[in-house]
Structures are given as C-alpha cells and as structure tokens.
Image (cartoon, rainbow, N blue to C red; front, side, top):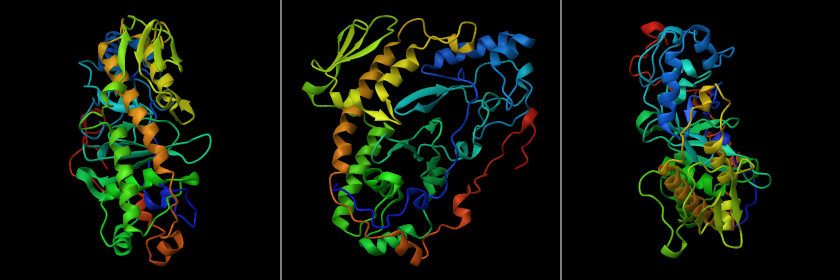
Length: 386
C-alpha cells in the first residue's frame, strides 16, 4: 500500500476508544515459557511455610501472601489468603508475554499486582487484543493477539467490548459512516485489518473512500492479523525456504548468534536454517524478537527464587515454536513493506468524522461495558460486590 499523506487522519485512539493499561504482575515467577515449571514453582510455594513462603512469593506494596482479593473473572485461582492456601496449581493459561512470545501464566489473582479484570471478562476465542509496539523510526507496529497481553507500557485495545465478539470497540457510528462512503458495510475485524496495514507515525490511521483500495488494504491487514494471532492453520513457507534443524540443538544452549552469509541461526553448536535476514532483523518495540525470545528461555533466575525453577534441558516443543516463529517473522518481514508502499490519502478525515458526529466518541465508549452476566467470587469465597 502507497506512502500516506496525513490529511487529518484520525488517530487509532479515537477509532478504538476503549483501552486498558496492561496487566502488571509485580513478580516474574508466575509466568514461564513452559507450564510444567509453573506447577513446580507453585508446589514449592505451597510446601514453604511462614516467612519462607513470604520470601518466595516476593511481596510488593500491592500484594503479599496476606492480601485478600477476589477470584479472576472466569473462575481461575483461589480466594483464601495465600499465606494459608494449599492444593494444586491453577491450570496455567497462554498469554503474550513479549512481542511474538507466547508463554504460560498461573491465572491466580493473588499472584498479580494489577490483573485488569475488565480484560479477563472479555477474553475469549473471538477476542483480538491490540497493542502498539513503538519503532525507532516510522510507524508503530500494531501487535494483534488472541492471548491476554502482558506487555508493559502500551495500552491494550480489545476489538470487542463484550464476550462472544459482541459490541465492537469502535467509535459509535464509524461502521455506518464507512458503509455510506465505501458502499458496503465493513466488519469490525476489517477496520482493525485496515489499521494494521496503514497505521502511520503518531498512530494515525488514514481512511480511504475508495472501495478497491480499502479491499486491498483489508486483505493485507487480515493476513498480518492471521500471522500474528497464530490461531487456526499454521503458516508455512515454500519447501526450499522452510527452516529446519540442520545440526542438533544442545541440551542447554546458552548463546544465540546469526550467520548472515549462510542464513543460519546458531544455538551454541546447534544450527537452524534457512533463516532469512528479515526474520533475524525483525524488531518490535526496539528489540530484536528472536533474541528476546531466546533470552526468556535461557535466563537462569536467581538461585533460591521460584524463577530459578526451570526445565533441566531444552524441551522439544521450544524447537518447534522457534521454527514457527522464524516462519511468522519471515512472512511478516515480507508483508509489512507491501502494506506501506502505496499512497493512501485520508479522504475520510477526522474533521469529517467530527462533522458526522462519529468523533469524539462519547465518554461511555471509553469505559468498559457491563458484562457481569455471571457471579464473581470475592475474597475468602464471598460473593463479590461489583
């Protein structure tokens, strides 16, 4: 898609008005790249008593083992004070811990300083969470995920305000206005796809009134969404370009380097290729994605802490995840430049949307919707008062 002129293009924050600060854990050990380590950490915490349990927990001003909190929406975790808790670990759930890095989390409110329950209430298989990852220059990267994002800093924008894909988080009247200008009513996911493909510096989203250009941008954006969400069919590269393990990975790799000439990724003496330069150079938030992903799986953790409880050897599933990550980054590195190569004039301007009454969005659109269809358990098993 062609270089964009910022003819009063509306910002993403106005088009998707409801946003939530990212969840804040307060401690690193409730997340890990593998679920087995989390269960082992929980067991170690449950075996500890008194001051030992408190030290392992790593208390903060927001959370100690004596803090009384309600259960997370969805029924995960207990509600008795952690100081006297016992029993098995709540079943870990998948989250987006860093850009393109899906890890596991113990879904227990007692372990999380700021869980943002309003996000948990709308997290389901229909939801798409959007987070802006800054870039050193040029437009931000809009990260989209079906997992609850635990990325620090940037605010989280859910596509839907209610479970089941109900009530889009779009400025009221935006879909009707686009339908009138384009001749066909777009789906909420189409608007997000267009934003992913066309977002520019300052998180501005130029809106076209050209149906053919809109369709082209939506098609590119939907492919980017599919690659980032990684749900459904797994992406594959053509036979000769698929990455494979060419030399076995060691049991405990400690270093990662890239051979640009041979397009190979080296984990100590282990080798994966081909890995195109676009995959190795891919950055999100100013950090190289592959290096950050590897560091999360090889960090030792301070001895005597729960974070030190990790797999003794490199699990085979991590190798499979790494091969898929290389594939995703390769395809995105080819796709994103195509999204930004055409000239998109913001024919539907912020001024036009204000004149039509679409902007500014009403205050209610910037607050969570009421989605309390079921009961939520408060501290010590009481019914939560909400």
